[in-house]
Image (tube, rainbow, N blue to C red; front, side, top):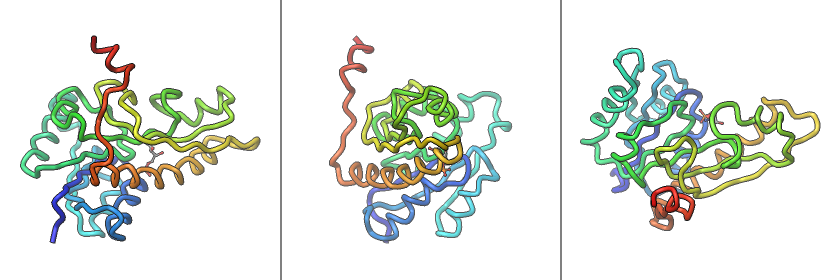
Length: 206
Ligand code: GRF
């Protein structure tokens, strides 16, 4: 029997963060059903993983659409009849457009592999190494129009080690991503976390 709370996960590649949610649902740690996994990359390994778990999958190829807005609209139209309660961007490499954000408002979260607001955008681990910070980490946040900019739900920090390179730091951070993302999903499923614009966002609105 499918649980009432329905989750859609968007991925672009390996899907380890998606898998951490799948495992948590299977273990009964998240009382929700994984309705569909969507990827902008038809070759994403995570799509295979989802299929192995009997989860619906759908790939949307950006090259088949005339614009990002059209691409996003196709995904929105696909999701609408599925009555999704939460959209999780899990290693999803594209910026979701304004229409997508407003379609899900406070019911869309993202995981970014840095301690936001530091190191937004691409290759945050290299940014951290280049800057010479002593702590790196990851952030789960609600998605707003800005890039990696929404209200923060949870963060986890890891130390940078002397001999770290981008790959070794990424691997250490990924373990924490895989840990906190299902925790955040569960907090939302259980209604323990709600979207609340931070003072910063209020200021930006007024
Ligand atoms: C993760 O570090 C994620 O935060 C980033 O891409 C990496 C791969 O994620 N966006 P996954 O293994 O595909 O979930």
